[in-house]
Amino acid sequence: MPGDPNKLSQFWQELKRRKVVRVITVYAAAAFVILELTDIVAPSLGLPDWTLNFIIILLCVGFIISVILSWIYDIHPEEGIVKTEPAPKGKTENSTDSSRGWKMASYISFVVIIALLAFNLFTGKGRITIDESLEKSIAVLPFLNLIGDPEQEYICVGLTDEIISNLYKIKSFDKVVSLTSVLSYKHSEKKTNEIAEDLCVNYVLEGTYKKIGDQLRVTAQLIEPNNDKHIWLHDYDRPYEEIIAIPTDIALQIADHLKAFISDEEKQRVERISTSNEEAFEIFQEMKYHFFSRNTPSIPYVEILQKAIELDPEYADVYAWLGFAALWELSYTGMSNSQLTVYDALSNINKALELDADNALAHTILGIYNLWVKWDYPEAENQFLIAADLEPNNTDIIFYLNPFYLSMDRIEEFAPYSLNSVQVMEFALLLYAKLKNHQEFEKARKKYYDFVGTSALPPIGESYIWLEEYDSALYCFEKAIELENWEMQTSRFQAHLAIAYYKTNNSNEARDIITELISRSDQSLLGSPEYFIGMYYGGIGEIDSSFIWLEKAFNRHSAELYWLKVNPILESIRDDPRYWDLYERTGHKAYDDYLASRINK
Image (cartoon, rainbow, N blue to C red; front, side, top):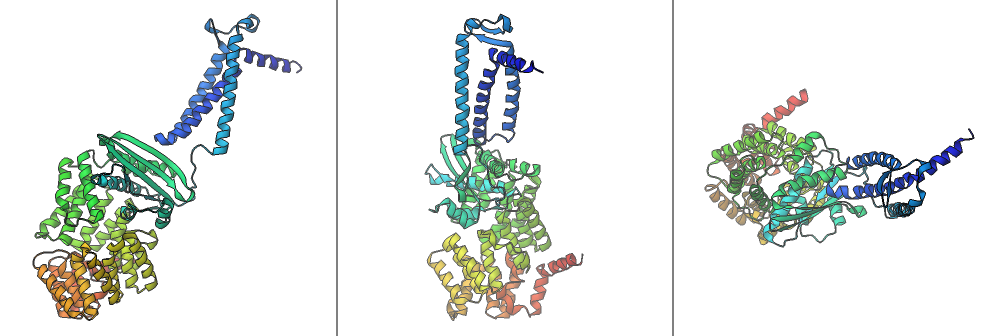
């Protein structure tokens, strides 16, 4: 077909005459710039993943329209937009200025395209990619208070806690470090990569908080410390009243940028805002701040939480904490009316679950209720496992599951120590002490002390008692007293200190401590004194005295009696029939039968 090249040449000339080629060039440059800006800006604005595809579709449609319009119409300096005349009638003498403008635009477009290509090639600018083969493990470090006002610290910790709580709900994360563990880095001078190495995580979220009048700025950045890669950064400049929604958005952004799978149910749970009442939110966060800081053990938690409920009667998390606070006061702060406290605890837990059936906190506390109060160990386990299924990486749940399995002598179920969390390490000490595994015990002891400092001394001392290393136990207890650790006033601490004294030939000191503890037991249920007095007498071989006090512990429904089965200090009383009678009445035999029935199935 000899005429084809000439026709193609004529068609090309007609495209040029009608300036279609120049429109394509300029449009391509503009589209390229728009796509680059969208790719760079979309993550920071929190736009969904389909945004870029949507822009591409719009640009494709726009391209077709532009080509059609440029074929039909032309722009003249004097006449404006006019319909392009056929070639034989074209007025080439009037197109000089327009042609020069289009040429200049074409040249500029070409230069822009080349520049952007070079920029992407040599700087790697574009959407951050992550290594999806890496374990999705993350630590949310305490947000930095840029205000400098100590009264605002609880908001920084609250933001951190809320983000962690939302991440707990996403099962595809391999590990989410607990608030208790990250708080030890609140004033740390360690670099981010060092903290990530300590906590064994691949990703870290850092953030800052600043409030000016009724406005706030929260900045969050997601980092891959090992490669010094900043994956995502966003500033939230919003009215202070919108602070409640920010942790939810941050958690979803983390999941999105780390390519973590999130089901529709999980997304709904994450997006569920616990309260819309700003004041109730603040009261709740301040209460939790004092609790986790452990610097004010006598704070009236119940009264504070009741204020939050008055402000928002549908605040499920607060009802769950009210249930926990009631149990905590019953067991560790001394209450005169235990039956009323137990009733309040259960009614608040049930209210939390009525408002939010998937509230992992409420299921955890219902497990605690069955463990401490009812001695219904099968139901306690059931509730803990429901909570763990809802939030599989929540080490606060593991904090109760671990002692449960340890106290039930189900050591094989104990959560792995590799989780590197305070919650796991505290009971790992007792686990390795029970197993007489000195090598693993020393590793756990050092790691635990490095995490929490001198607050670790009482639990370490107790573990040395289990190991029958009484000199080491006494050293830890006396060091805690010297540092005025608040735990030294508890019945648990006093009883273990008395055993350490007795076993190191300081029987007078031991007798003085127990005499004081007996005197206090008549006035308060603080810290289950009857159980620990009974434990002390069992530890020194005074069997009858031990049973007298353990029977009192039973009558007062001591929360500590679930340890009856495995506590090595009570080894001397296990050959006595009275032990097995108490064993049955405290639910242990029923749990043994329950386990046997599961095996037979």
